Length: 458
Image (cartoon, rainbow, N blue to C red; front, side, top):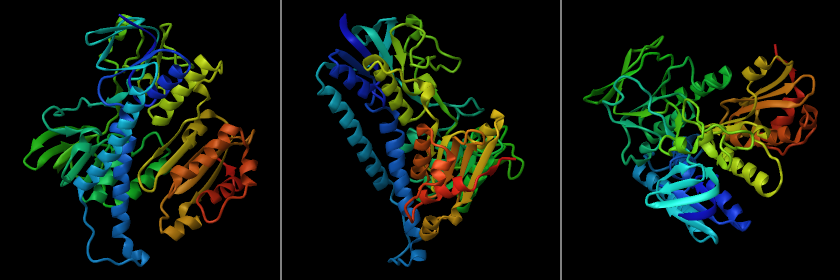
């Protein structure tokens, strides 16, 4: 039995910074990692995929170079092994940084192996038994494999395994029209593959407003991505050319055949092999660990952070989970999950930046709402870059004039959204932003215009 002040299970985005804070406060900490340090973001998520998105963007711009007056020696090709090597190098460097920083940390013991609970205050890792008054679960999640007919009969890719491809798919079929599926769809289309996206729902990005979904569909289709929505009866079967997906859609063929299929139908938490029942930790029907506003589980002395608690599936929410726990434990600062404003980006090109409520959510709230909209074709910066797809939209509470939400689908949208996000956190009114003066020429300079031209939402 080895005794510590704290045990942290998982070296994803919340685990390492919490380890450092606890160690700096004089506590002895054991951090257990069974596979790759850095979690999803570093190894199979943000870092490698956004590195590949940058490669796809470079190919896209190069093919359009002539429209900007740039000429070259010949057609633009794409070297996937070289792009993969670059993504691997960036990911590996980040992973090594996390691992080395932990192994060099005073009062920190790094244990590589699979942790499982033996009791509420005891964890077993292979042949070791660890005990602590406080245990923090930070085990992340993985791709969910849908229970569709034939899924076990064909070789399917996930967001993790697709990163290992060394050659371009001739025709990539993507099941799932959410953020992951659409990012890979545009990426591989720009690499040079034929791509078909198959979505069971009536539209892409079902949690977004319909105007956002329609605009995103147009972005992808203009680049040659085939989109099939309303595929209510999907099944898979092997084919001499790879795999055939049978589907029922309102229009189009009832089957499509490709060389590869990517399953992008959601995530599931890595909680099914932790023996949580031995600690008495409650999970919901999908396996997510239940937590309160301070990320405490139902068992005293056990917390859950990051994707496994179902309170956020992003790197930034996982890191904020660490901040909430550290503030409450070490600073007597009662930060809460409910203080967090939902915000994220979808890294298609142009990107979608989102903060706060959608228009649909605002309508459901029953409040009187004001709306401001502007197409990107009216944004000087977008025109100058010849990237005018998309629009900007802001939502304001008509009574209080507080900002309720925003969406920016357009060049720089993932960055420009932050000005609005921070204004929401600051409690600013629409008048504050309407009277601000932005820098020309930028995308953000149109934000005051949006708030100055509000109209009632009918």
